[in-house]
Image: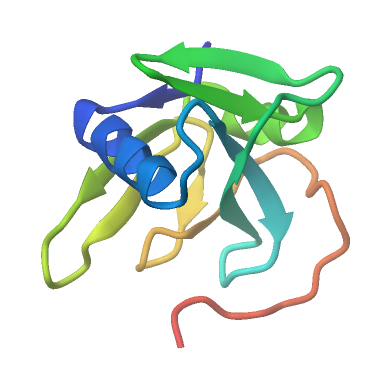
Length: 123
């Protein structure tokens, strides 16, 4: 299954890319160890995909995901809200069995990709 952006998320990514003079670059989506539920979502912008990346076209945005992260993000939907309270990128992950209250970390039934460092995201 692909990683998808909602129209609101696509619009925000395009705004960010334009504000950083990186029009045409892509969004890297990955996981890193940490957060109160085990793994945290990680977003960054990159000019090109890396070897072995999964690459998805989400409207005008290219989304890159490394193979290890993809094991935990298969089917992920990223949304965006500009609400004053709890605004920002929102993640709907069909593989998440547990999600922290702020929605930025999660765990699945699969083994964690990295050693745990037990940082908290909901302090």
